[in-house]
Length: 633
Image 1: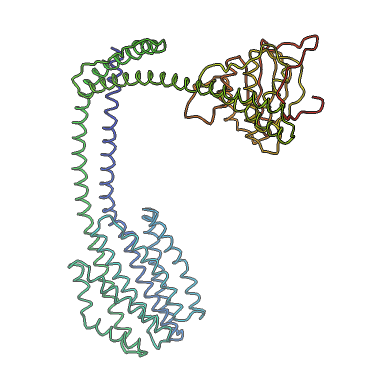
Image 2 (image 1 turned 30 degrees about the vertical axis):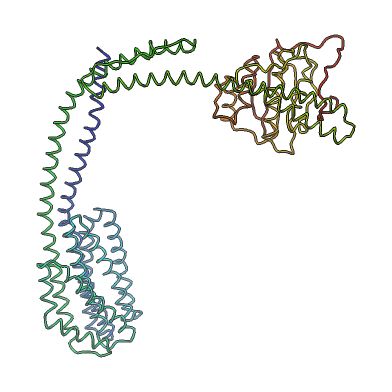
């Protein structure tokens, strides 16, 4: 009953996970939608704290720019000094008001805060601009461009604050800002064209005229009718048509009369129209925000109702599923803990087995399908195990048969080579026969490797103990690069005959591995010494060595021989060594060498090692091989 309750709890918990995700999603949707409403409402706040004071400050800077140009043109009279001082005071008041109001909304977003900082930076340069004007260090064109930078920063703030998620309001706001910038370009024309103009000033004037006309024509084509009507009344007025004629005259090098009055009138009209349009857009955002909020509440309520219904359905479904899954669990545990182990044990003994079936009565088709799937998996697993055992036996038979045939042929070949060596008189021919005999010895070792892979015993052995020095020499003789192997002198202990063949094969595999994984110009040192529990043979190379992880992995395989994997053909030598070591209780350990390579330590148990006889015996004949030994061997 306790396990059934646990299963029920887990199932209900799993089913509630997607419901929890739905709740989170519901919260996210509600927050995002409500956020959109709040952002639309915030549009009015941003207009009050940023755009409107920026609009007023921009107008004052436009007037200060014009007053500065008049001051430079008139020769700095007392009247002009008074007029520019008054205008600078008005600009300073507008600047302080902007700083005060913008501080309340500058942290609305990172983008707005960055743009407000840009405006602050430009406003801080006003005093230096004024100083250059008063000192006579700035001409008319330079003065106009200096004020332009500050006003451009203000329009950058207009565009940044005008970004809103409601696309229609954003598009109309962008067009209104463009018209406001067109009015700014008109005031720049006004300042440049006071009095005679230079060629450089006329070129800049022509650019300003082209840009202003383009902005007006483009914006009027996309404004909605209500906002367009405010602008069209200005564009179609006689004053605006007179302005276009005057602009053409100035570009041609003339100086039309009434330029200042005409531009002043149009600038005020454009500024008033822009302010009116901006207020209308700000008012439009409030009902849109209310509609978005209502939509968010409806969506949130609908989602909440669906979640409640889903929770009730989930609880009922979870109870039913828990009961059926508990029954399925008990049946599967019975098969896995009792019946299936019995089947595997019989398979290992070679007996005929019957695969237990898993039958679960369930009203839920899916759970019944799972029970049937479990039964099918069991059947497939048992069949695979039988097939794997048959395949392993078949591969072992193939390896063993091939190796036995190769051994027979290689034995006959060695007999013929020995006869040819005895008959040969030419040193070069005898050397070739020695190399061929060495190759035959290596082929014999590989054939024995196949027999070991099949699980059988190679069959090569000695009836009497053999000196361990001769055993190591015999192992070195079975390696391709035997010239690089140096066998150092070692004690006179002997190795019991029955294990000589396997030990020679084991040490030969280690020596060959050392020669393969070390540079061709280096040597492989082999030495032996008596140990407390037997005899130790050291095979040391001077190659690149192995990492600590690789050493741990190989030592683990050598200590516990793995099952032979046909796909892992690159590790045949490692498998052969581990099999031979396990067969005779020999311990093989790899460790790092002081020279940077790897040292293999073969510890032969004491029961396989005997002391030398008191009287000298007839030496055991070894095949003639070119060997490298140290002095005194």
